Amino acid sequence: MSTKDCFMKLYKAETEKEISELIKRLNMDNIKDWIPYGKNESNFSVIGNQSSNAERALIEKFTNCVDAVLMKKCYEMNLDPKGNNCPKSPSEALEVFFGLKNGDTSEITKEIERELGENILLMATNKDCMSTEKKSKSNPNMIIFDKGEGQTPNKLPDTILSLLKGNKKSIPFTQGNYNQGGSGALMYCGEKGYCLVISKRSVKIPDEFIDVDDNTREKWGWTLIRKEIRDDAKDPVYTYYAPNGQVPTIDEDELSLLPKELNNYESKKYLNYNGSCKGFIPYSEKVNCGTAIKLYNYKLAKKGPINGHLKYDLASYINDTYLPIRFVDCRKNKSSNSVYFRGFKKIIEENNIDEDNEKNGLVYNKIDVDFKIKEQEVLTHIYCCNKRPSSSLTASKLIEGSRAIKFCLGQQFQGGLTARFLNSAGLGAIQDLIIIIVEFPNISTEFRSNLFMTDRERLYDKAPKKAIEKNLKI
Image (cartoon, rainbow, N blue to C red; front, side, top):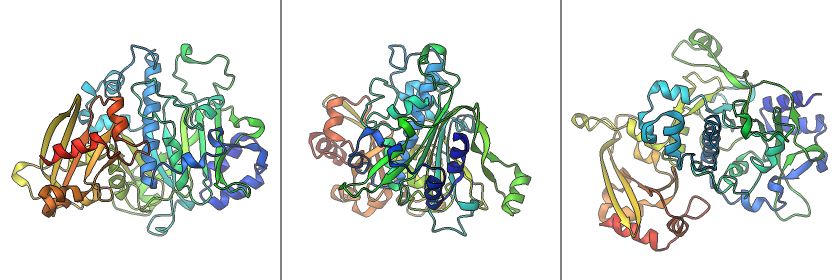
């Protein structure tokens, strides 16, 4: 069987049981053919100490996808990502690469959103495309695809399959600096840790940025990741399939990695529904490059349509995705099955209301307060929410746990203060109706390292945090 056929069987598999059976049937079960993820036998200590839930781990994937798309655009403009002429921040990259003035994502119209949204997709699948109504207790499989720079098979071990290499530290417009966030999602891939990865270098990258010595530069590279429980080890180890030390390659121009979007008539027939709906058939549209990662049996808190509650759950962890991400549900739900996600900022802006009709929306007032801690500028955005908005969206849906005050690093929420702090500030009666976003423009290395822990979820109880608390209470 060809490597393409092997990959497609794995890609179309929808259960852990199917994957386990395919590993045996495709003769992939030789232990010598599996290499530790990140070339580190103790990788569980890194992978297992990142995101505390599946939703936050997905945000890390989105960050990597946005970085990949920005990298591709940089190359297409004949700019060296590490050179002096490249953008110095993600916002500047949005202006240079996509023409967004000052990198202001609020300027993205619906038309531009649809265009940009095709760069990054999040897809949900399951066995037989069963609707969530019939299979609500089952974890979906999640596929993250980006039309970014892509990687050659030879480069996969040093990029997507690496740990702690710091590949992006010298590229100022990217966000994924710790070189570990992409692996955090493995902890939530069912019981076996199955995750399928495939990538091909973008065909639009100019020759001057291509490694001419890489004889795999025009091929797809793929591998399967799994969690191994070894008798002689204290912790599990994550490994990836690499027979003879090399990830498998596919010598094809295009592969069917994306879903086909049905028109209105086809959707009604496919979904057996006469109302407004949109259907998608997985594994039907071909692409000639990019990266796809399939997370099997992914343990989301809510199993329903991903164009519903999931966007609110994810908005608890990211302020602005920079680029729109299209959510596509390939399960046969009787709904639109598609939505564009851009983070907390977009959702909260959509729910701002007219001053003459303050009872209808989520937010009835917004207050911006800026201050400085020594040389560090701090921006705060205070959203005062209605107790009973007319829509189903409430403040509690956007507050992760009880963190009503969210500290923003880059555009991710990485730690914060609980509603208890609001209570101590004399706002206990309305603590459930206030959301505060705290941003740090041009944050210095010293300030960041004394405030944010590297797990992206907690804060150090040091001088910066205490100074922020003091200023917020004033």
